[in-house]
Length: 336
Ligand SMILES: NC(=O)c1ccc[n+]([C@@H]2O[C@H](COP(=O)([O-])OP(=O)(O)OC[C@H]3O[C@@H](n4cnc5c(N)ncnc54)[C@H](O)[C@@H]3O)[C@@H](O)[C@H]2O)c1
Image (cartoon, rainbow, N blue to C red; front, side, top):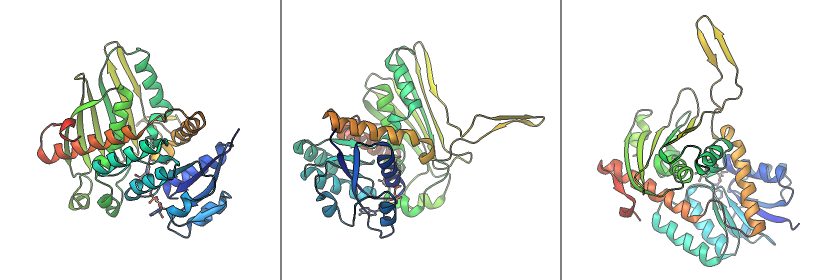
């Protein structure tokens, strides 16, 4: 089998996860190079015996015989790196979001298409075993006709305000995963978004122009709905639940816990808190999304999450922002 040569841009929280998975779990892959602006990141590259550590995207893309690039750098670099990689004929895996501007996302998805390279978006939750099972139950008709999707997505704590300022806001940074999940789990397109938001966790987030708590109703083209609730802080940890209610029943995915023990005493019943945050909760999904990216590279088949999925999640996010601002439901056709 041909070795697939990949390179990674950005070795922060998510870049390290992909580097570790690619090096440890995929013998058919050779991570030939990594790029980061920080000198310290070279130590991580050395730990995994990566041959080249470079500091610019040009050097990374120019590495010999490279098949593809995995983009894990900050959000404001994604569009530029996708464009450069596509024009150099490299396949691309890119973390969400593609960009904060819809025009720019449309521009780069067109460039990718023209270049004839694959582009996969890092909507890892689609590859989570629990959510995949719920999707399977929806597809095989176990719950009949889906009527309501419910997604609860709450972080254990807010990110630093400096991060909030450049993140694109809660809808494009955090809820974007839920918008994609709503589309994936239902297999339907969203036609309207009605969102309400508030600052209930940290006034500094409000001063930075964002909200930290939100409720959103998405209406699909057939008038069925998804209801999403978000908060930047849940005191009991990472709260990630999903439910699809249909004409013949309901399918649910509950939180995942480090263990299932329950302590029963005269004062009550207690157990472990949910897995703390995304690196723990979604560990399996990060590995599986890389597997499916590599499978698509080997087979030359369609990427499981493509540029259009990236585009639609951003359009829904922008509609949600507009909905909060104007206090009214916003149709996707007003955005895209
Ligand atoms: N899919 C997910 O679950 C998930 C989770 C977290 C983050 N993300 C996304 O991944 C991206 C990175 O997030 P993170 O949490 O790993 O951030 P991070 O801050 O932990 O890491 C970013 C890394 O990129 C490096 N960097 C900075 N400027 C760079 C540049 N111009 N070129 C290359 N590297 C550069 C930094 O030095 C750092 O090592 C963001 O776009 C974020 O939205 C996705």
